[in-house]
Amino acid sequence: MANSSVSIRYLILGILSQQAMSGYDIKRFLESLGWLIGSPSFGSLYPTLHTLRKDDLVVMNIIASEDKPPRKIYSITKTGKQALQDWSDQPVLPSVSLKSFVMRLLLGSNFSPLGLLTHLEQRRLQVATHQADLAKATKDLDDTADIGQRLAFEYSLALANAELAWLNNALEQLSQKLPTAEVMKGNSTNY
Amino acid sequence: MANSSVSIRYLILGILSQQAMSGYDIKRFLESLGWLIGSPSFGSLYPTLHTLRKDDLVVMNIIASEDKPPRKIYSITKTGKQALQDWSDQPVLPSVSLKSFVMRLLLGSNFSPLGLLTHLEQRRLQVATHQADLAKATKDLDDTADIGQRLAFEYSLALANAELAWLNNALEQLSQKLPTAEVMKGNSTNY
DNA sequence: CGTATCATGTAACTAGTTACATGATTCA
DNA sequence: TGAATCATGTAACTAGTTACATGATACG
Image (cartoon, rainbow over all chains, first blue to last red; front, side):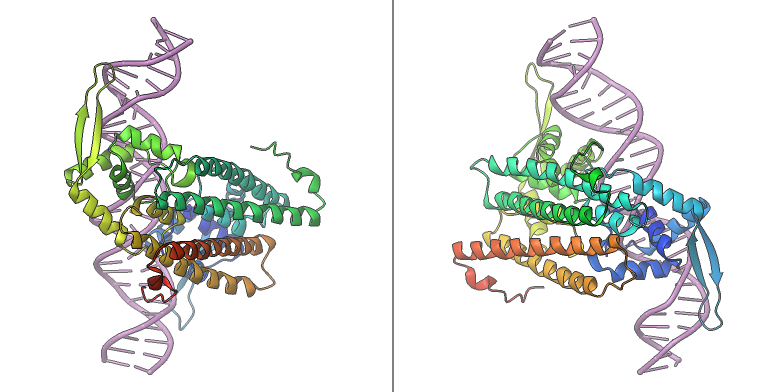
């Protein structure tokens, strides 16, 4: 299962923030999620755990049960939580993939309830921009463009539209639930 | 503009298959496409052109106009076209990103008209599988799941649904146009 | 005339993969 | 007892990036 380069460091840290576990467990957990995010190889997983530990973002405890082989259980530290939150608060670059966005949803949301909304808002802005670009490019595709090219643009545009629709809906639902509605009302001063 | 690792080698080869141009032109062309695919850095673009040339997949001609600085124009060779076609005919692994799929649409379609349909069919199968996985996972999210987790799954599911709908529609339209309709009628023996 | 853009390139680094190595436990 | 799985790790490699270097030409 290839990973599509979503910084493994914070992926692991995020998982450990929800549940202390071993490297092997992390891999199985990610694989259980199917293609939602993807799972890094052991060749990057274990070394990353080592460096996280060296940086005091996680601690390791060897759990040696009588029958099972000993397992190394990693838990997030206070420093680690802070680092995760810092990362989580950073605006997502427009270039980063959908997967990275999903990953932040999945892992970063337990922080600041407002962070979730700003995160969605940010994404909406970026997708809207992308959608506008695509709409324009699709419209003035010259007539030399073959069917494949046309499909590629229409396809991307259709997906952008779907994403935008979902984001709008989700934001509407959320801002109804939360009393913080004022902050989000489309006045995207943050960027 | 980050690239999200869509094998740059075939990306370049594909562009050159449609139009001979310089490294600089390739970059500008990709940038003009916005986030549709993304553009590699010069640091990987130029070295890739060198190796493509070494492998005889492209040839280089120095065009020295009087006033402009001399430009190195790369053209695809017969071997290069064959290599591109071979790559294009290979089934796309489920793990590869949406971008890679779009890229194949964009670049590979000038080959075999049937290839386009099989390409779409393949994608449909993969997305359908992914969608089923997601639908299941979303349904049996335990009640400890926080709102972020729930959103992450619903979001991914919504996108998978949209993609599936588009693919179904596109395939229907195409099979009406083409007389090869029989081959595609959902009998997905290919996999 | 200096700054922006055109145009090409290299070197050092980063982040990941694949392939390999090791050993313990489970289970047919 | 031998194969599958649990569990951890390292080494070599691959594919890309960033930062740097260079020089020419265009333009205000």
